[in-house]
Structures are given as structure tokens and as C-alpha cells.
Image (cartoon, rainbow, N blue to C red; front, side, top):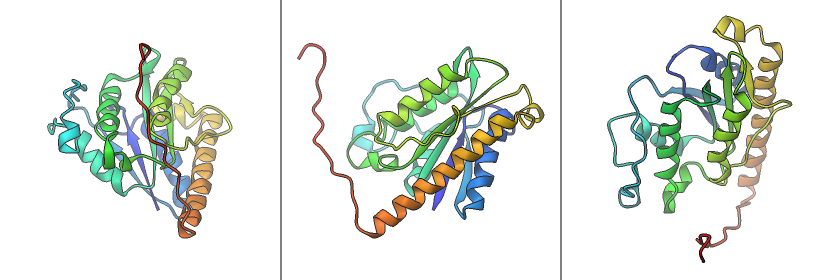
Length: 211
């Protein structure tokens, strides 16, 4: 089993990475493989609603890390998405990354990259804006049929530097408990799969507020 952890910070080994590392170490202790995927610092194009992904099976833009990540996502069993807080929200690159990664894989068989796989989000901040960022990020999972993994507190750490994050005992404990909970659910899903258990799928009606 493998968990793909996404570092949405422009800092490769900053506060968000420090929190994700705490999650990864605990998952490793449960014999679960982990990989931290960094979205890097190159600008990430936002979704332009061209709908080409419906034809191509991937995002039409190949100049950044989105399609690279999605290819890895097919082989992952669970996900943790991490972002720093910018003005009480996720940073812009992470939002563009998630918009395209999820939308380009929300059609037909492409949805298999994320659907029915456990997921969690974490956020890091010096002081405030974490709950608003958590609310923002969790919506990607909630619309994608992903079982959402929680902890004994909202998944966040506080600190202005990695060293300060390491002093956030409750935050680090939250990361570890998140990992324990994710490991448990992954083990349950694995056992269920061995027994042939599957999810019943409904046809999805598509309406708006006019009809």
C-alpha cells in the first residue's frame, strides 16, 4: 500500500513539508509506503474550462507538474494534500494544481485516480487562517467520493519555521493520529477488497437551479 503526500508549498522543506514528514513517518511505521510529491515553484496554470480533458483523459496543459502527479495518483492507495496558508486560504499554486488535477480526472474512467481512495488535507500557518484553508481543501475530496480521514483535532500545524513546527506538540500529535487513522482505514479497505466488496454506483443526475 502506498500514500502519496502532496507538498503544495513553494518551500521544498518548509513548515508544510515538516508536517507531511510527521504523517509519512507514522505511516511507514505501519509498513505503508509513502512519497512526498512537491509541486515545485514553477507557475502552475489555472483551469481554463476548455474541457479538452474529456477527450484526452488528462489535462491539456503539459508544461507543469499536474499530469505528472495524476499519473502517480493511479498507483496510489491514499492521499494527503498539504498547503501553507496565504491570506486565510490555500496558496494560489496549490489551488490551480488541485483544480486541474481533480477536474481533469472527474470524467469516466479517469475518476479512478482518486475515487473511493482515502484522503486527508493538512495546512500550516504561523498563526491563523488554518480552519478556512482546511474547509477550502477538503471540498476537493468531498466531491470526489473520497473517504475523508480526520484526526483528534483539525489537521493543522502552527509555526513560522520548521523548527517552530517541531515545537507544536499538539499539531504533531494531530499529524500522527491522522496517519494512524489512515493506516487503519487502508487496512480495512484492503481486507474488504480481498472479500470482493465494492461500492454500489448510482447514475449521477446533473441539474442546476433552473431545472
